Length: 269
Length: 273
Image (cartoon, rainbow over all chains, first blue to last red; front, side):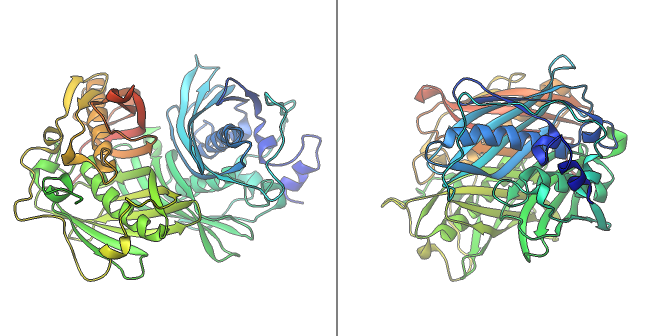
């Protein structure tokens, strides 16, 4: 039984969103707030919450915010996600604020910021999510408004994020996961936050540093698996090593994402 | 006629080459002192303008028969390009979908060394009569918009008329002129990135006390700057030894302070050339 199946069978529910435990509250028009703990299973080797987990929170709260803005015409899929991690050490709980910057004919742009309520509201991450408006086959999801979603009580004893995803190193510059059902979103494709986490882990595996900045373009859905992320170093600057990471659906034989990542070397953390 | 005789895209003296299949394009930018910061290498904004021109042209081709609007531009610079060098931008379509086009642009110098990497995404829009037909600009061999008289006569920020109002707050201001308009009559996207570059540089230098230069820009385009003056404000997010990060808002002050772009910028110590 995989770590995800073990988790899926528990009372804690299933899926990426529940692993993160985000409570959602819809605010004024175009505003969404998420609250999430900063538990041990989301933290990386540097002690802070992994960039991949922060990106997943950004994608999750920003995506719901964008989706509500797209109603009644349709719902959204993430097309690109850009974020900079400002604070690498967090106390938690985290507050995620998403605001619609622009609602166009076929996309929604959302600003998303994460603050650490346990550390005098320090800014943890600053990002922008762009989402494309699509009309799902069975229509957009129905939500009671204003939207309120509670994740339930925090779980205990969860495996660290990389272990929970089943990440394995397949080369000095590449990591891979299988596409387990629990990692799929409601549309049946790999959750965007998992793609972001795979990018984060590939960059860290390749550079030995800590991911701080990510710009990720989702190019195609990951449907088959295994999903592989391959990092290539472009150069080193005073803020860290810059690398390009591409994500491929090996079973689907296609490029599904491209990211540029800045990873701070451990001595700088 | 676009661009007019006196225009930044002519004065930058680009040359272009487009593949027949419409999947790739190349552009070469000769680096002159007017394009460089006081640290002696090409300004990120100048490289963004190169990226915007070549990426936008390629995306417009990929979207045919429809047209495009730039949604965002990201640039990461990893090596400095000094005066006398030539930066080549190699653009490739990564995705051409019904609603979105994504283009990646790799920047290399004349020694095939990585200078930087950029990505751009575009929204696909219905074509209007004013949009150019990209089939006319693709095909045979290298082309340029430069005339014999085209050249920058002042450092790029000065040529744009940028005035610094408050360096530590990253407040700069400039007019929207015909010299820097795009074919839609608004400030050209790469020039908008240059304005963000200048604003972030001032704010982060003031905050850090170090002569940092902008090395990353992530520009989200939200609205056109048609009226002017265009005005910036920068919020410094963090500063550490050798680098800092800022968020820059640009508004069209003459159009009820309409938000034009939100930019996230990183500045680092000068990049080796």
